[in-house]
Amino acid sequence: MNTQAFTTVRTTRTPIEAGLVISILESAGLHPLELSISGHCSVAGADIDYSVRVPTAEAAEAREVLSSYDKSAA
Image 1 (spheres, rainbow, N blue to C red):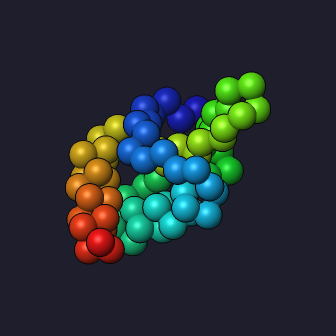
Image 2: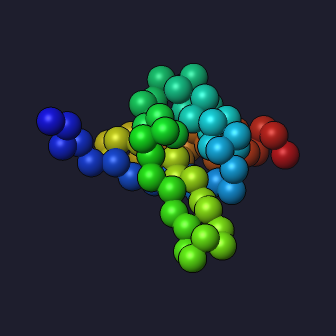
């Protein structure tokens, strides 16, 4: 049984965007949850958000990687 804690590092509006974020994190050697097993939320069916989660120990590094990516893409 896996009792490892996970932290959300990015929330996206589409599964495609979440997949891109997951790929970026994996390329950096991090271990995000697969989207198919990562929870997503809906309030009365109005909006669905896809949470990209990593092991809590990797959260700070994941945020740094995504921040660097955001800056280079701008």
